[in-house]
Structure formats: C-alpha cells, structure tokens
Amino acid sequence: METIRLPAASLALFILFFLFTNSASGSYPRAQNVTWKSTNFKTILTWGPEPSVDYSYSVQFSAVGQDKKNDPNCFRRSATVCDLSSSLKDPKACYTADVQSEPPRGETSDVIEPPYTSSPRFCPYKDTDIGRLDFKLEVSANKKTTLYVTDPLTAVFKDGRQLNIRDIFADDLAYKVTYRRNKSTGKKVHVSKTNVIELPDLDRGESYCFNVQAYISSRSPDKKLGELSQTKCSEDKDLSIFEEYSVGVIAGAILVILLLIAIIIAVTVICCNRRKNAEGRRSGKEGVPLQNV
Ligand SMILES: *[C@@H]1O[C@H](CO)[C@@H](O)[C@H](O)[C@H]1NC(C)=O
Ligand SMILES: *[C@@H]1O[C@H](CO)[C@@H](O)[C@H](O)[C@H]1NC(C)=O
Image (cartoon, rainbow, N blue to C red; front, top):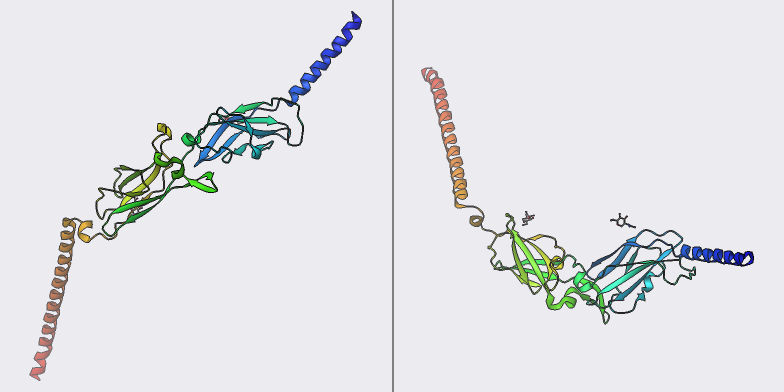
C-alpha cells in the first residue's frame, strides 16, 4: 500500500502544479466593455481595463459566417483601442471582434485558448454614424435660396480612391434640411435626394437659418439621421425700407421729423422777434436823448 501511495501522491501534486501554472498564465483579466465607435466608416474598437506589464491584448475579427483573422495592427499590444477601419473591407458585411488577453509580445505561451471577450455585432452600412455635413448657402439675384452640400469622405478606399458617403450609400442617401425664419422658432423640413437643394416657398428678403443632416432611408429609425450641421443664416441686407418697416412706423418717423422742423422754425421765429424787439427798445431809448441834444 505504502509503495503505491507515494507515486500516486506525487503524481497528484504534479498534476496540481501543472494546472496551477497553466491557469496562472490563463488568468489574465478578460477585456470588459468591448464597444464599437464608428463615424463615416472609421471604426474603432475600445475596451478596458488598461493591462499591467504582465499581459497584452490581441484583436481577432471575422465577417459573420467566415473564419476569424488576427488584426495585424492590434497584435499583443498594451493599447485598449484598435482601429479596424482598414480590416473591415466590405461596408455591407456584418462583423464581430474578439479581444484576447495574452502574454506580452515576445513571451511564449502554451495556452491554446486565451481568455477573450466578444464584441457586439457591427454592420458598418447600418451602424456607422454619419458625421456633420458642410454646406454653402447662396441667395441669387432673384432671391432664390440654394444649398450646396458637400458629401464627407469615409475611411473606405476602392481602387486607391477614397470614397465619400454618396459613393457608398448611393440612392439610400438623402439630405434633411431644417430651416426657420431668423426671427422666429417655427421650423420647417425639406428632404432632398440631391446635394444641390433649392428651397421652395421662402419669403423674399427674409433672413432664414438652415441646418442639414444626412438621411439614410434604409436604416432603422434611430440610425437614419446623421449629425446636425452648423447653422447658417441668409442675410436680409438688401431689403427696401418699406419691406423692413411697417407703414405705421414710417408715418410715425415722418411725423416726428415734421414736428422737429416745426419746433425749430417756431423757436427761431420767437428768438428773432424777441431780439428785434429788444434792439428796437434799446435804440428807441438811446435815440431820444441824442435827438434832444
Ligand atoms: C465598464 O463599464 C462600467 C459601466 O460604465 C464601468 O463601471 C467599468 O469601470 C468599465 N470597466 C472597464 C474595465 O473599463
Ligand atoms: C440672423 O441672421 C444674422 C445674419 O443676417 C445672423 O448674424 C444672426 O445670428 C441671425 N440670428 C439668429 C437668431 O440666428
């Protein structure tokens, strides 16, 4: 019995030791809060916590239904972000990514399956945010208002050319214009399929303020609208005085001016008369004795 027990005990110890060392290298903290952040197809994966010097992170990604690939730019690094824009080549595919906790770069590991956390599914075409649009505002000589919207560039390249959002969304992309009179808060909305937008039914000579945002009709309701642009206002500088002020105000102004003129005339007339009278009296008083001499 004794002779059998000893090797059994040392075998058990050996197994325990083996398990312990192995689980130690496999006990790197798992990544948490694995999150996609994506604007105009520039797509970044973020997570936490910051790793200690004892381990690093690697990122693998796969299109749904395809094999996992290592991302070459995010292999065993201590960063907690990974730019996957150039890896997610097909904007219309859906992807998941795994963040693996691994030994630091240069150290070997016999761990077959390192601990990892998977990201939510991400479909660039449906999910990437559309950043704010830039636009030019033009009021022509006949007071027609036209907006010229610039389609922002994306992080997607095709045949060496950088694509803009129109290249990718094609007919799915429209523009939502929100506008109001400069002096009021009542808003109106106009949706245009093209990036040269003529606005109907604007009052001539009024100043209006405009915002533009991308509108992608095929998307789910909470993802349809892009970021709101800056506000731009048209000018109302070449208004004639009669358009700018009501008849009552103009009549009032004329009345005030006439009154002022009347007062000035009245004051001058009264002053002159008084001075004449005074001079007349003075010359009268002084004249009498002279005549007497
Ligand atoms: C994950 O997110 C939660 C909630 O926002 C936060 O409390 C926690 O600190 C985050 N963990 C890491 C590792 O960033
Ligand atoms: C009204 O338009 C002018 C330009 O004509 C602009 O400077 C001003 O900020 C606008 N006011 C509002 C409330 O947007």
